[in-house]
Length: 240
Image 1 (tube, rainbow, N blue to C red):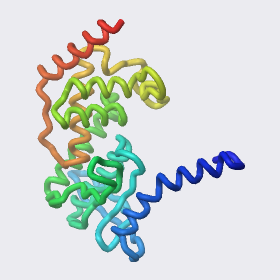
Image 2 (cartoon, rainbow, N blue to C red):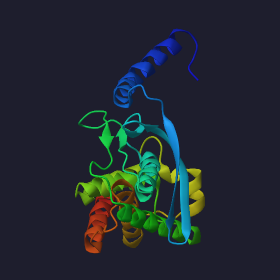
Image 3 (cartoon, rainbow, N blue to C red):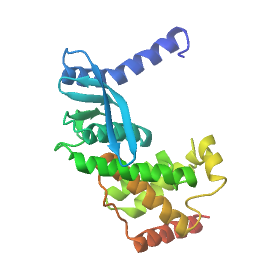
Image 4 (cartoon, helix red, strand yellow):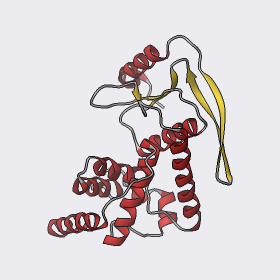
């Protein structure tokens, strides 16, 4: 809730000014046609995956994320997109978010992912889900996303630095303090030793490569992961 009086009005004006460019870009893309929703389902092995996809316009499915993409928004968008493609739909899936080349529209796959590849990607995500029901995955939405962004650019040293900073921040919110991760991890720190970190890095890259690209052939060289952890850990020791 905004405070009353001039302070509240000023904050409201600032918020409206922040949102207006997104609204204008989205309105220009969607046109005047009303949004629809469609129910999709697909069989992945022995599991039937189904859901209702809202925000379906004449030019495709559109989503707005104010600011840059985050780990949780990437998960939501990626699951919708993979369901869309796995069900054989070729409608564009576009996103509006803060990026170097503007607010969008940013199509998640300019050339639609094949139905077979989307089904394979969903199958791998289901396997990870089932594994996570048996033991905690070395994964944290925001820290893993930071790692994925760095690793995707090829800079593993930056990837671990950014991810560790999100996990345990010097100032502000630390993902390690979120109640759900404290409950699941029971004090386990994914950056505490080289093997834990390697598991975290591998899982993070695998999950987000599936969600963002449908890529089922993600691999990071174990020796590079260990080297990047040792370099980061040495820098931490020097700082202390």
